[in-house]
Length: 141
Length: 141
Image (cartoon, rainbow over all chains, first blue to last red; front, side):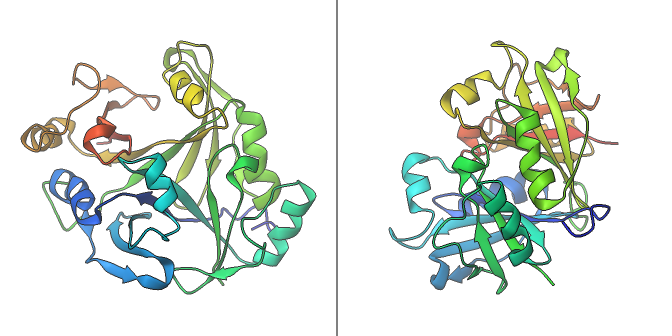
């Protein structure tokens, strides 16, 4: 955490946007023997999700539910699919937000945390300010 | 591993291509308090690397050394930078290769493992056949 620089932070997940989560999950299950979840529908987030479980992290395969999904634009630009974002856990979003303001890193939307897919507060950093990588921060107490 | 479906596999790293690893590493160090490494030069792989250490995985920030670098094309298409690939550990590349052949997933290059940046055999799967995500497989005994 920022308040204790000797503690390593944890990456929560890697999100991959695809047009069909069931097809995409087969890459991992049938070729590499990975453990995959059932399809989870998250209409409030505009996506269907299959989790690919690793010993140290999970991949979230995301498929848009409709054209208003937050990943629909990404799939229009990347029709084959691709790695959409990575999510890093933080203990206190309000504390790290102060650093972003100081270092001129913008937060997407109105800047206030939203409730993420895991029920925790999340923000997304503007990838223009983070060398092209979309970074989600999830507050995990 | 494919030979034991009850064992979860491990993701080794997430590789992010950027034009300047030192600048990009500051996002993680100065804002989130992450632990970062020194710059490692890997001329045989055409890149400079800074590792961002998490408790469960590492990010490898990659900067091309010259225009012949394997990530130069990616940065021409994505000048801000972006997530380049993810690396999954496998016990035996020759065993998983049989699945890829069966499922018509192509391997980049001539199909034979090369020595990766960690000194282990690696292959990269053709992202056209893996829903747009570039997947590296690293043999870790």
